[in-house]
Amino acid sequence: MMELVFGPGLLFRNAVLGGLFVALLCSLLGIYLVLRRLVLLGVALPQAGAAGIAAAFWLTSHSHQTEGGHTSALIGSLVATFGALGMLLAGQRGGRSPAEWGVGALFSIASAATILLVALNPAGDLEVTNLLRGEVLAISDHDLAVVIAASLLSLALFFAFRREILFASFDPDFARTIGRNPSRADGLLFVLLGGAIALGVMETGPVVVFGFLVLPPLAALRVAPRLGAAMAISAAIAALCSVAGFALSYRVDLPTGPTSVALAAACWLVFTVAARLAQRRRRTARAVAATSLALLAMIGPVGCGLLFGMEPPAREVSRGTLPDLANRPAVSVARFRNETGVALRIPSDNPLSEARRAVGRPADEEWTVVDALQAQAYVELTQRGVAVGSFEQDRAALPETPADLDAALRLARAAGREGPVMIGSLRRFTVTGTGMLLVHLDLALVDPASGEVIWKGSARRPVPVKSALSTNEIVIDAGPKIFAEAFGG
Image (cartoon, rainbow, N blue to C red; front, side, top):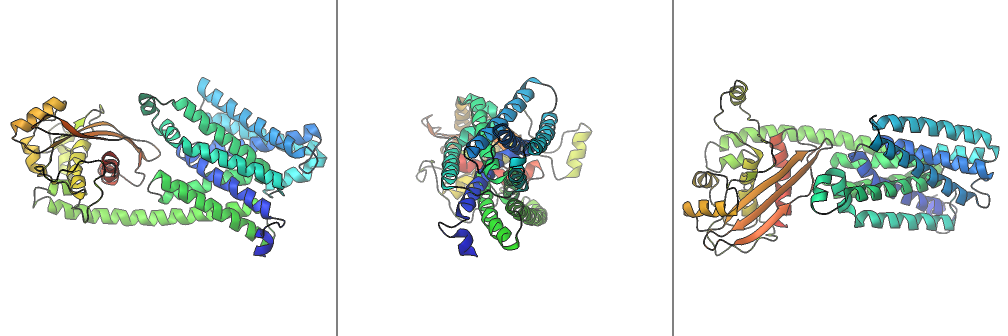
C-alpha cells in the first residue's frame, strides 16, 4: 500500500507532494497568525477562496477537470482571497468596530455564497463539494510544479525578511527607530498569507488550509523555547500529519483533508497535556528553589543574586564578542539605568514588605528588574571566563546609577576601581499579551584608567516568556537569553 501511495510516477504521488508543500507553507505562516491573534482571519479567508473557486466554475461553466478549469479556479481563488483580505484590512484601518465583526461577516457571506454558487452550477457540484469536504484533488505534473515553485518562492521571501516581519509584528516602534518600515513588512506577510491560502484552497480545500494554519503552530508554541524552534516543530508536525493522513485515509477510505487535520489536532492535544504537566513540575521546582535560594541569600554576599535564580555556572560558555580580559583586574558592574519610564519593581516574596508598601511605608529593600539584570551580569560574565568582583561590594562602592559614560568613569575612579566597569541601560522591558518580552538592553565596558570604551553590546530580540507567571520568573527565564545576545554568544 505504501508503494502504491508514495511510489514515484504512480497515481497519488503528486497529490501527496502537493499537500505536503501546502501544509509546510501554512504551518510556518500560521505561527505569526497565531501569535498576532489573527486566527479568525485564517477561518474566513479559506472560505472566501472556496467561494472564489465556486464563482469561477459558475461564471465560466468549467470544472477543475475541463480545459481552462484549473486556471479559472486559481484566478477565482486569488481574486476572492486578496479581495476579502483587502476589505478586512481597509475596514480595520478606517473603522472603529472590532476586527472580529468584519471577519465574522466575511465568513458568513463566503459560506453562503459558496453553497449558492455550487447549487447554481450542477456541472461543478461534485467537484466543489469534494473540495469543501477536504478531498485532495488529483494534481497534474504542471499543477505540482506551480505549487512547489510558489511555495519555495514564498518560503524564500519569508525567511529573507523574517527579521523585518518579526519587528513589525511585535515591536513596530523599534522597527521604525532602526530604519525599517513595519507597514511594508506587514504587507509582505499578508501577501504571503493570502497567496498561500488561495493556492492551498485550490489544491486541498479550506478545511486543510485552516487546520494547518492553526493546529501545528498551536502545538509547537506549547513546547518551543524560541520562535525559530516553534517554526521547526510546526513544520515537522505539518509534514508528518499531511503524509500520514493521506496514507491513513487511503487505507480506511476517509476524506484525506479531515484525516490529516484530525492527526494535527491529536498532536496539539498531546503537546498541550505535556506542556501543562511540565509547567506544574516547573512550578514545584521553582517553589523548592525559591526556598533554598532564600536560605542561601542569608549566608553569602552573592546570595542576593542567587535569590533571582542565578546559580553559579557549571561550565564556561563562549566569550562571544567580549574582549580578552585575562590580564586585567576584576570587572565591576555598575547599577544599570532604567530608561523605560516604568518602575519595573519586582514584588517581594515577603508579604510583610508588600503590606508596608500598601500602607505607604517604605519597604526595607526595593528590588527592580534592572537590579536583577545587574546581578545576572555577574553570573553571565563568570560563565564566559571573565573575572568579576563582588555584587554586594560593587553595590556599596558604586551606590549611584551613572547617568552617562562620564559619570560612570567618575564613580569608578572615586571608588578606586582599576578594572573595567560594565554599565547598562535598559530602554525597553514590555511583556505582550502573546507571552513575548520586548527588551532593549545596551551594555558597555569602560576602562577607568584610559577612559576608553573597550566593548559594546546590545540585546533587542524578543524573548518568549509565556511560561513565566511573575516579573521575577520573567527575569529568570529571559536573563540568560538577553545576555547571550548582548555578548554575541
